Length: 173
Image 1 (cartoon, rainbow, N blue to C red):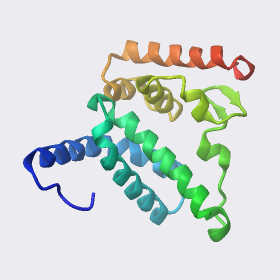
Image 2 (image 1 turned 180 degrees about the vertical axis):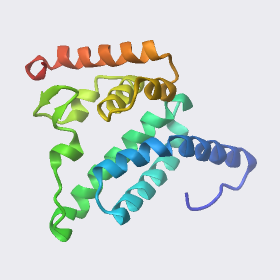
Image 3 (image 1 turned 90 degrees about the vertical axis):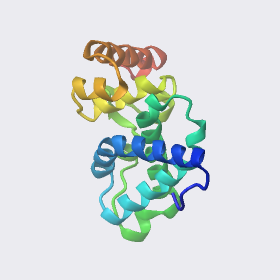
């Protein structure tokens, strides 16, 4: 977000983006803090992700889905950062591919494939609910974030996990 857009319509768009970004920043920061050790790297990844999100903000059809959309951008940016910058070798930081890519034990399912493939069968709200649930968010927090009732959020998580187990039975519990 290098500069403010020149005309008033672009200014309103930038203001809306900033409002949505600030609203979702707590959840994004929690994920970053859990998965990335070094503060400098956290800030750099967040800055890159924010720039990517701003550049593609016009493609977001429903602003109610901003947080899961932005979370996906942050996660992909972190993964790309570690792969392309080769942080593993240069800083001797332990980079656990299972932790960063989402493979391993996740959603009470033992996975040996990339979690992005599994989450790819879910819509944005289901994906956000499942990811937040796996990160120990309460049902109330999840419901507030995706804009539904607690009962609907609980049902959405159950159905999303069921979809994953049905599509990938060899990894299901």
